[in-house]
Image (cartoon, rainbow, N blue to C red):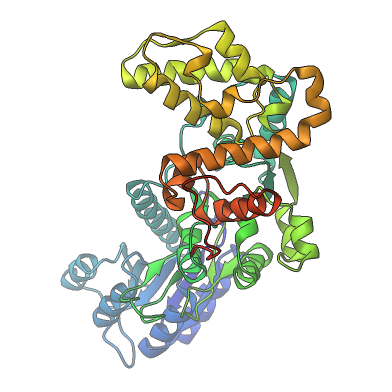
Length: 470
């Protein structure tokens, strides 16, 4: 017999006191979380509170016809796994129960081994249905191999650490600047973990308004707020058995942080507008480019949540600290773009030297955008220095002076790049954020920072102080 699924809950509905007590005791002893009900009314109440994985349903109840109750339970939760139990069954009732969505039909008295087998098969069926829905919705684990390219000692060490951490399955916090590849590393953690066949769900915490983010994470019940016309399952439920990646977790509100902390501590949550506690077995991987300790000092981030998220920490070094990888990345992505656009471009040695010397404040994401633009706009097959964007060609000071001016040059380089992109798109912040590979909120913060340190607001850049909505 297969191992009991973790966090499997069973609702046992039967008016026979002895049968109910014995079966509940046996199932509990075998590791299931069992809730019982002696009537149809109790069953509906418990179903709304517990959202059980499997319901064992007697067809003869004092206040409900079992078939009618089956229909009501399926209406409330179409994905519910229901096994019918009865001592007075007929072929007609069995057929009717199966047509209404019961997974199995057992006659009493029923040996506990047979009952447990039915529970396990029903659980497996429910998991397969959910996984099919997950795959259809596009939450399958991605192929991370194409995004992982590098030869530097820092990169090799990162891969070695990720392989060890993946097997540990502990909650992990990924730190690094914008564009270093935090999502790619999170996907690799999932792909190399025992959960690799289960869903990998990505949540961009910086891109969603608080109420929408909570609805996405935890789901909501019908009527929870205006426009909530039906029950919605949250992404924590979608990720059950797999991994959920909380990108830019440092941008979440205090209220959302409190809810995340509860999931980390208890493995349970409630949908918005709901009262039922839902158990979830999902590995949480979070990432941020913010200094969370500074955010804690400013009371913007919960210290207890930080320590929960940072059970294991992975820090991805910026591209300027692993320049050996730049040449390999340029060749890799040039080949990809050539294939995509049916071209045969190559980078000249002089242009390659400029690319290697550039500090890449936007890291790998900036490198990809620069290469794509250059490859598409280049007139010949050989990319020269003049074909590179001015934001890259402008950083040509001798390397022996870079150590003295590194902090200033990085800020200036990032500011130049941001304002150049804004100028290209006519000051449209939303479009600029998409091209830069960041959220509009993060772009707004960068603009505010650079406008405070320099009077140059750049042509085409909007100078209003109204912060964009999330």
